[in-house]
Image (spheres, rainbow, N blue to C red):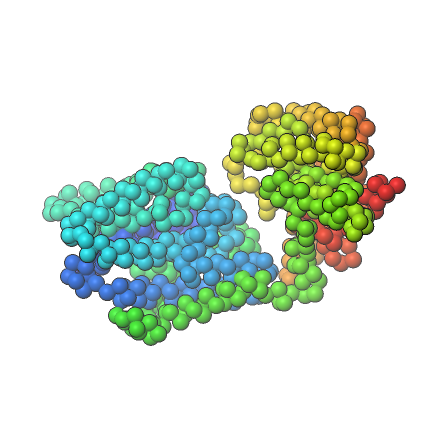
Length: 639
C-alpha cells in the first residue's frame, strides 16, 4: 500500500488529543476519543493486510503475527523495563506488586481484562496504574489474533464477496452490543474487545468498500467533515459521557471519512509537524502515560507543562532507537525460536510475574517496614466476614458464650472477644458481613443488596431459644454510613451512589440522617434486649489514612509523617454518633463499650503499639491490634 499521509496525520491528531487529555483534561475534555480514532486506523490497516493476502492466497498467519510483534513488543517492553527499574528504587512493595501484575498482564496483552475489574478509566485512582494505557494495546492485539483466524476459517466456506458481508455483520453486532454494554456497565464496556471491535471493523470496511471520489472538492469536503467530527468530539465529550456508546460514532465516523476521502494534500493534517508526530505516535502513546502517573505520584504542580513535550521527546527517541530496529521476519511456526521479540516478551513477562508473586519484593524494606507490610494482611484467620449469612463459630459450637454481630469492624474484633474464653470448651459466634451493621429498618440504595435479607436471618437466629440470654455485642463503622468515607484511598468515585441511606431517601440531610439512625438504632437495641444482654461498641477511631502504608512510606522514603490522630479529631467525626449510641443504649438498658478509652490516651489515638501497626488499613484493627481491646471485653463480660 502506498504511504498514506492523511492516515499519518490522523495518527497525530489522535495521539496529541490523548496526551493533552491525560496531562490536562480541562483543556480537552474529550481527548480520550483519540484512542477510538487509533482503533479505526488499526482496523483499516490490518484488514488491508489480511484481505489482500487472502484474496491473493498469500496470507501467512505466522508472518502476520511476527510483524505485529516486531512493531509492538520492543517499545512496550522497553517502557516496562524502565518502570520496573524505577519501581525497585521508588515504589513501596504494594505499588511495586501492582506494577508487576500490570507488566505481566500487558505482556500477555490481557491488561484490558485486569483494568475492567477496577473503578473505571476516568476514576482518580486509575492515575496510580502505571500501565493503564496498555488496555488499548491489549484490545488491538486481541483483534489481531482473532480477526485473521476467523477470516481464514470462513474463507473456506464463503466467497470473497460474502466474506466482506460477514465483516458488515460483525460490525453491526459489535456496535449494537457496545450500546447495550455501555448502558449496562460503561466502566467495564470501556475496556473490552467485544464493545470496541466495531471501531476497528469500521476501519476495515473503509478498505473493503472504498469510496470512488474523484472530485478534489468532494474529497476535501469529506475529509474536512471528518476532521470537524473528530475535533468536535474532543471538546463536546467528557468523562461524564457514557463511553463507548452510540456517541463514540462521532469520532469513529470522522476517522472513517478521512480514510475513505483518500485526500493526501490537506495542509491541516499533512504538514511537517503532523508528519513527524504521526510517525512517532505509537512511541509517544506508550511513553506518555507513565509520565502522567509519575507527575501524579509525586504531586508535581503544572506537570503538563513539562510532561507533554517530554512525552513527544521520548516518543522521538523511542522511534529512532527502538521502533526503527529492523527485526527479521519469519513465515513458519517452526521458526518461532528465531523471533527475537518473543524472547523480549518472555523476559518482561517473567519479571512482572516474579514481582507480583513476591509481593513487590518486600525484602527491599527495612525491618520496621516489613513488619508493617505483613500487618496489612493480618486479619481474622477464621474468615468470618462473609458476603452471605454465615454462622462462623470460633471454639466450641455447643457452648456459645457470646455473639458478635455487625460489619467488617465486628469481624476485626471477633478474635479479641474470643481470646477471653477457653475455646477448648467455650465458643463465640460471629455474624459479620462487610457493610452490613445490624440495624432494623435500614434501607439500602442498591436494591440488589443482600444486607436486608441477612439482617432478617440474623434476627430470626438470635431471637430463637437456642441463643436466648447469651450476650450479644454489636459493632459497626457507623460514621462511614452516616457521614461518608474519610480515607482518600477509599473514597468512592465522583458521582457514585451512596452505600447506605435511611428512610428511602438518598438525599436526606445529615441532620435527618442522624435522627433516622437514632430512631432505628433504639428500636434495634430495645427489641434484641428483651431476650439477650446487649453491648454496643462505640466507633473505632478511624485514622483517615492507611496506617501500615504510611509507616512503610515513612521508612522507604525517609519521611517522618505523623501516624496517629488526636482524640479531638476522632470526636469531630464521631461525637454525634457516640451521643446517639449513649442515648439509645440508656433507653434500652444496653451497656456501651468504648475502645477509645484504650486506644486514645493523652489526647492521642495511636496507630502503632511497640513499633508495630495496630491497624491493617485506616480503620480496621489488625489481629495484633484488636488484642489491645481484650481487657475491655474481659472486664465487661466476665465480671
